[in-house]
Picture (cartoon, rainbow, N blue to C red):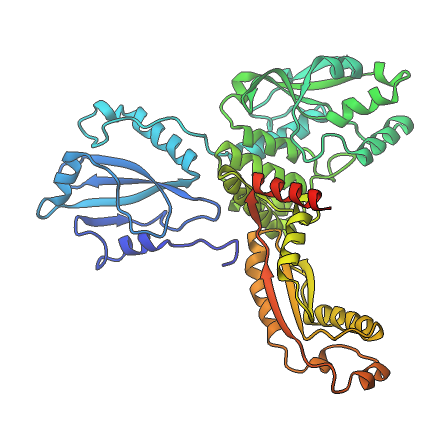
Length: 480
């Protein structure tokens, strides 16, 4: 599936089809039936067409059939009634936490728990606010205008009062807190660019931007710097008179920023780092990845169509699939960590100890053992290693190998899947001497002595119990 496509889930296909949906659903509004990319939950609504009563619920998507999880006796009774007629519709999509918040807002707005028109017996619970693309875009445009000292009719959310009287760079550096929005807190290339701009008086050094009285990622900041870290740090690092020079700065008050999510402000902060707008390091795929992971950790939707559109505008469209893969790996690692498992890195002492143990267990006469990462095994590479080692054994007067045993270590679940194709390509080799370059002299020496080897693979674990890994290392050290 292309990342820009919408998808109609199986359970909604069944609801849409009058032959497969429950008999009590007589009317559907399928306007929002298609699942947007990056959304994993729905807010749905049932309306009893006979008495007007309503039920609103949320559902975390799965491949299982689903209609509702409500246990309300009146709702169950009315659905089971002969000739029952309900309208079904999807109100919105999002992460599960976003859908909790949408449900809570809808139910609280009518006090559903005490409202006879609603089957719901409670008003839900607060979740996580959805990201607001329109706000992100608008406030970004306004901040660029304010940084240029322009306040006109296009500025609708912010105002000229957001621009503060100048302070020295040293005072700003000492007084206010920074949150790490970007992948790198300080980028040396960016610092050098700004040093040049200050020294030779060219280019714009942009106003720093703060949120006033902001609770961010569970921590309260009287003034939270979201953009302009390099602008402040660079003249302070240059010392001399530069650190005592002044700059205006922008403060966004609480009454403006409080209604928008941390994810919204991360996006705005990153929007301010488009290469065409500022001196220094541009927003890149690592910034986008951090932004997506932070949104996931907050409970927001991530890697959505809106995210993709924004990333394309910021010049990293070609990296979208890479970002999706990386955040999938992050989620998998977090899942495994919650089970007490850790990813095995076969370049570390612990990983090397595990590999050493495996090699000892599989070693036998005339078997060549090779280890490699799952993205790299090719018949050419394996057989070339085989030929080189055969030459050594022949020169030393040892028996030649007649089989190859390959240990493969993976770095992600995606690699495990892609390895299947690589493995089949290797195992389906037909003619040994057609797949490698062997000099004629050695080929003559080996004639009748070296046969096409049997090749076998063993895939090493991607995750293991941390205590087990440490135990293996300890045993290897004792043996050594």
